[in-house]
Amino acid sequence: MIKIVGIVLKVTGEVLLKACEDEKAREEFMKMADTVSKEKRSQIMSRIRGKWTKPEMFAHNYLKSAKVRHKMHPKEIPGRPDVLFKDNNIALFIDGCFWHKCPTHYRLPKSNVSFWRKKIRDNVARDRRVTRELKKQGDYRPVRVWECQLTKDFLRGLAETEAET
Ligand SMILES: [Zn+2]
Image (cartoon, rainbow, N blue to C red; front, top):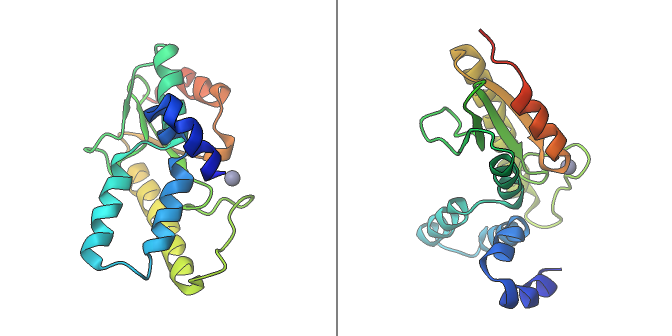
């Protein structure tokens, strides 16, 4: 899979790199989990974090084309949502099926089992904490969607949701 994308990549460049990065990021992370020094690891992680995932690109491109006012990854909002809908104050989190443990697609990797179990459990705990915090604050309504359920219809629905007053 990665290999095929790699070949096409030479033709279309950056766009496809972003398109396959979810899987790439995961592969990279797995490789380094127990072989790479701590400093090197955080270096790699910050590089991964700086890129947009495929579902994030999808959301941004669609919202832009539909002229929906939004902001990607606003730093000032707790949990740094993936998309902030500016007109109705919805904070959308697009949860990757692997990293956030989608009930349909998550599979525990076969190696480094205890590492992954903890890593994913921590992610899920953080997701819940962030959702709770936003609800408590009340400025933005948190919405979470699995990457496998992200569609244009879903995004349009969110955009058309009335602001809570
Ligand atoms: Zn899924």
